[in-house]
Length: 209
Image (cartoon, rainbow, N blue to C red; front, side, top):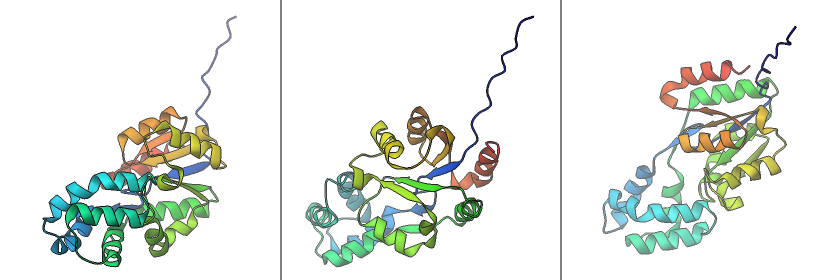
């Protein structure tokens, strides 16, 4: 009699790894650009075009916040103070309340929570101080601190080498398809997220339990 080989069920998730932007908090760089543009000879839209390449260097840790503001001021003709630039640039977020509720539920259930984000040394102090939800996380990997950005496979290896989690049992939540694909390739249980389809996300995650 032939033996029947049943496929093993997928591993139960025992940790969660969250992206930040457009997952826990939404962001809009145009909000900052509109505050800064009156202090430049360019429009808010043109300001964004000129500054965006510099934000990549900022998020990779290649530019300090001070060096970023100096370079951004030079490329846009900004004549205001560095302090005003910093304040305008940091305050671009809105809290995603449904996701916060989900995170709070996971925390009450005793599940380890971690962060993986392409971010920078201006935004991190602001959102960590402004939104209490970030105090619920047990560990974090930020691009500007490790020198790699998603979807670079290296940053997922940094996560696995640094945080006390097992990729195959960790749900990774991100709003960018390329990041989810890279996370899945690294062994994580990747679940895409859209705030417009939060209920679909809850259903997808619920199916993993």
